[in-house]
View 1 (cartoon, rainbow, N blue to C red):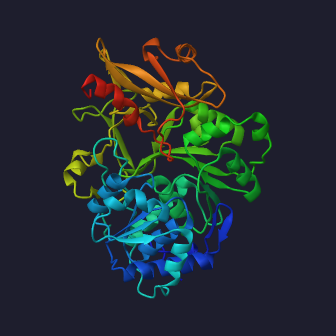
View 2 (cartoon, rainbow, N blue to C red):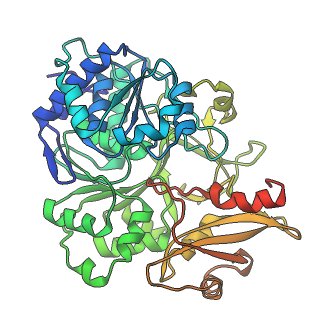
View 3 (cartoon, helix red, strand yellow):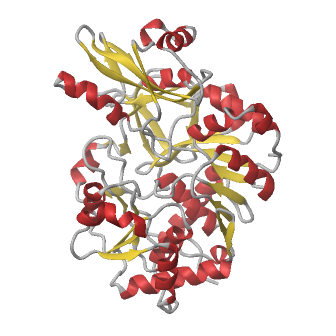
Length: 502
């Protein structure tokens, strides 16, 4: 039995993995991990080095991740949609030693791969052949490093988040594991479903912890609303990681489809990564029962708040209270703490997580900190009982005629409109008010919506000045698989035409 903690644990040896319905038994998974470690070591990977993984959801992602962990190397997930310039930036900035990449993705990034980076192609047969060419790793197991994700890069280049090693790694791992078990709900024997992309930090952590805790992980290549219901019934799924976009798509399935499936096995669903509209969460709780939980978290901050289904029904729109030991304050631009219900910048610190730095960008890291707390530019407020309510990202806030408007509030109202499959609200230049509101709307298949209908729906639910003047309909919106939307792509044409950015 190996030592527990952030190392590859004995429980992990018992974890079962299913990918798109096909089982990877525990002995096969362990064998692949040990051979991956041996392969990386032969390629020169040492403790503290970086292995980049540019893979879709697949067993190779987790086998490579745990193989690198055995050597004490960082794993750096790369969004598989990236092109040469985007992927090349991460490979250079992270000083990656190895890139594991699916074969059909190589053409789109090969011109950006810097000299000195060894490429391991991971088409299903190629990955298995590469593993088979190496004996199982027999060297000492190193203290595992955290994953080293890169921020989504809403402004400028993405930044790599490298957590610093704690003074007492084993104790820190135990404390973190207890925190994660509470918020993620995972435990040995859980049957956990994950269809969000594991290149994103929250699903990556979910998959990692499911394996470490000895759960049975059902990893899906992509999310499909009806298949999710089928899997829950057929496999008696008990736990799942789902984001609000997935909730909305399942809720909009025909009633006959929703009634067809037995979901009584579900015990705990975690939603994280983007705020869930109160109406959507309430509808999910009414359908699935009190199993829908939410957390406000970030790669830099770690887990900040948590809210149960019961609390969410009592306090619609809240992201919960800080988890034990976490400091959370709302500050104004000058750093003064604000009273309850006053909106300001969210500053937090979860001491369970070690300090971090941005790779090659310590100045950007320092800009986040004030009096030992960190902010990512999110706006919000606390009620009298310490429950957090998110307003929006500071960069997404629209100032129209001197009035602060938070698009997230408008999106929460709009996503509940029948016929709306997806939406985004953002600011565009206005000669009179500086900025005005625009909404990008994706209709459900076969539904024809009009600007007047959308505006009428919103006027019944929010103040008139918050109703977008412009409604533009799209076949699809540029949304990441993780649920985050690329608002920059929607805004850019309007601001470029105006010749300004704000």
